Image (cartoon, rainbow, N blue to C red; front, side):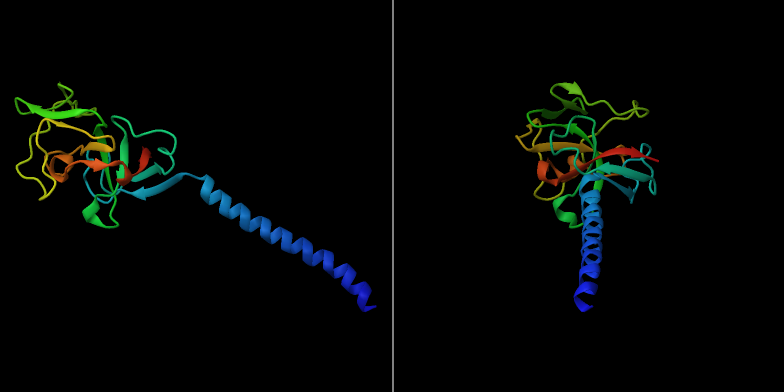
Length: 178
């Protein structure tokens, strides 16, 4: 009788083990497939585009097959902030020349436009820069360097203060906010 009982219990144990393994694998694959993550905007660095407390959806894999592009809103980590992440807009990509002409920030000789609805806004030269991050204008961006700007340039520090951001610091692309 013991042998017959084992023969009927063994398939059930095997079926349960396979089902549990399948559920575990499904959970792992769903986490790796899903590229979107939701964050709360911690500050006003992108106001009025994204307000403090807004929900922000980011695509963690957006740049796995392409490089960040002009005007992309990106989540990045400045070296000196440790685990803190910031969101800024890309205003200069590798190869671009960033400078100031008549007090106006320019990219490749053309004024860097403020995003809608901020067209009246200008990006003044910073009164000071973070020690060690000084940029001599005009500055040509290297092969992995980006120039990032805040949508609140009068109140926030961005590449004008921190200096250039390297590609490895850019973590994700903002896909939506509410």
